[in-house]
Length: 345
Image 1 (cartoon, rainbow, N blue to C red):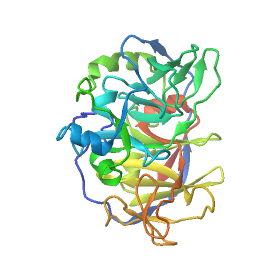
Image 2: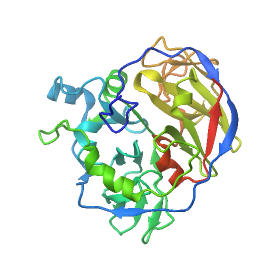
Image 3: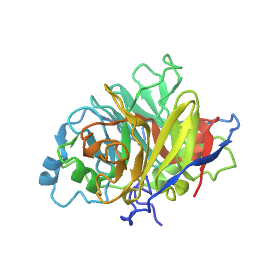
Image 4: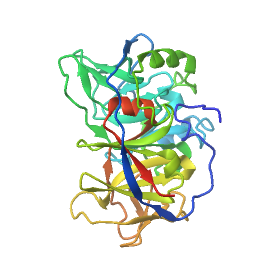
C-alpha cells in the first residue's frame, strides 16, 4: 500500500473493529545494537515554525470547509488546556517538521515514522539527522534527538526533554471527539502538501548506523521508554491483540491499547491519574467509535487517548506512558537495550 503521509498506519482507510480478546506477553527478547552512529547536519533543508497563531478545530473547519478530510493524519496532544489539541500533518509538518511553540515542541519525522510532542519552548529549530532520526538544535547550540528528546552534543549534553502526552490519530476521530480542542490558524500560506520522500530519504539513510538484524529495519513498532528500560511492541502483533495488551515493565503494570480505525497504539498505566487514583482493567468493546474501551470496575467508556468519555469516571484520565509509534531502525539505534515484547495471538 502506498504511503501518503509519514505514518502509513494512521492514514489507512477505516477498517472494521477488531474482535474482543486479550493478549498477554509470552516472553521478552533482548535486542542489542552495535555502537555505530551517524550524523548529517542539514539545517537549511526546512524552516521551523515558531509560536504560530492558535485557533480551535471547529473554527478551522468553518474557515476552510471541506479541506480537512476525516482521514487526515493528526498529532494530538491529549492533556492540558481545554480538550488538548491537534495538528494536521499535511498543513503544517510537511513544511515545518519542527514546530517550537508555547503549547509544546512538536516534531514529525517522515522517514523514521514518528511524530511527538515535548515540553513548550520557542528555542528549537530543525537541524538534520542522526541514526536515521531527525535532530533539532536549541538556541544555545545543544543538539537533541527528536525521537528520544535526549541531548547528545553541546552545552546541554546529557539533558532530556520532558515529553507531552500525545498520540497519532485522524482528523475525523479527533474532531468528532474534541471539536473544541485547539489547533493552528489555517492562514492561506498553510496549504495541503505531502512530504517529498526524495527530499528527506537521502540524508536520513546517510545518517543511519547499524541496527539489530533481528527485526526488519522498516518494521513498525510502539516503542516505550520508561527510563530504567525500553520496550518495543510490534504493530503487527498489536493488530491481533484484540485491542488491549497487558504487560509489566520494571515492576510497573502497562496497558497497551490498539484502535484499528485510526491504527493508533498508546501505552498507559492501568489506573486513573491524579488525586484518588484507582486501578482500572480495560477491555475492547468497540460499540462506541470514540470510546471503544470499557473498564470492568465501573463500566465507564474510554477513548484511545486515555480519557473516560462516559460513565462514573467521565473526565478522568489514565497515566500516559511515553510510547512512540515509529520504525525499528530509529528506535533500536536510540535505545539499543530495547526488549521486544512478544504477544500471544
